[in-house]
Amino acid sequence: MNNYWNKIIYKLWSPVYDIFFNAGPFLAARKNVFHGITINHQQQVLVVGVGTGADLELLDLDGMEITAIDYSEDMLNQARKKFKDSSIQFIEMDAQQMTFADNQFDVVIGSLILSVVPHAEDCFKEMERVLKPGGEILLFDKFLPREKKLSLPKKMIRPAIKLLGTDIGLDFDRLVENNNGTLLVKEDVPVLFNGMYRKIVLSKQRI
Image 1 (spheres, rainbow, N blue to C red):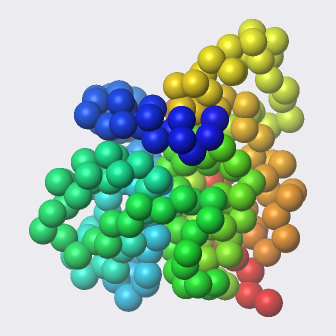
Image 2 (cartoon, helix red, strand yellow):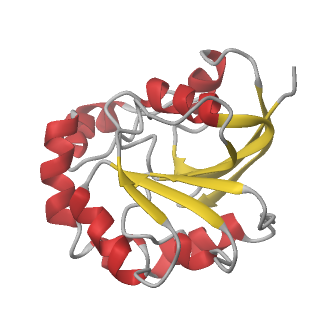
């Protein structure tokens, strides 16, 4: 995967994305992910890879300060249409090289983004960088099951799946290991397809 290819793929996905990933089991999983999540209206929230705005539909937006980024202008336009009367700031930006200041946001939300970007490690490090100490990262994504390797059939189809704009072989534990040690996993639970998709909550330790 690369950014140029992702722009092409998600231009094609943008008109129909919600039909596949914001309905049925995916919608149920998103609701599960955001259930019990409390965000103070004084907090600054960053949504990384906002896509068509599926996650925003599950937040109480009244009075909330939200910045939402995506590399695909076509996906962003879908989100803008849904929330044209909101105060959400939509920005076209590479999640692997964010232009925000260090320690800027209280909450960072990333749904189906780490498995999409060409370099998940860079995106994850950027999420940590822009998060304030004491803040939280909320993830909803697909990862390898814990302590399991990718099966041979999945290894064979992985390159083809990447052409569709996503990766089925991402190891979350490795992402955390490669982090600088400031993030603590508070919650890690399966939410979809026998644990292929997980809800993960991390907090940034105060130094």
